Length: 161
Ligand SMILES: [Zn+2]
Ligand SMILES: [Zn+2]
Image (cartoon, rainbow, N blue to C red; front, side, top):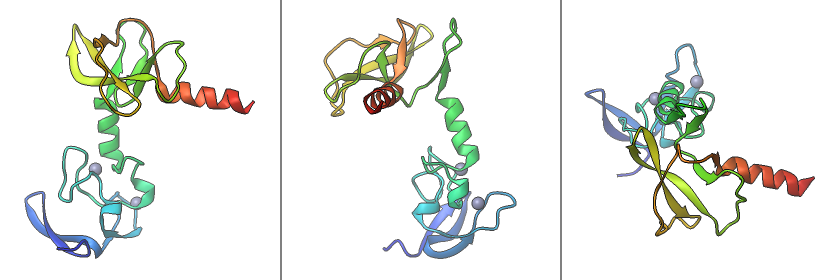
């Protein structure tokens, strides 16, 4: 089976997909000519998955995470956690650093472990290599955290100035 043309099940119906299958962007009102290749797919699996609806959208209507506006907004909302005391919003897909800590290539960063404890997301320490560190998990409500990407951007800007 190649990627040019194949059959998928979408919303309970068999249909054709693949980069040789011509299509129109499925965003309401958009007439952009696209194809049903993976590049235009919302989500990661033809037919839809937990990342997206399986619709096909033009570059303008697909986010950088390959999701349509609707699925992107739903994912943003599902991954946003608001600190009950400070009101600060966290995107749980980010990597975090304790506030004030510099980032370097060998730093530990903290990832959402996918579980909640005492009403707070649990963070697990991970090396930049992706390997898990043998250190206790921490809660996002304990202490202050910054997005590692924000810290990195600030350091780059400081270097440049
Ligand atoms: Zn979608
Ligand atoms: Zn479009």
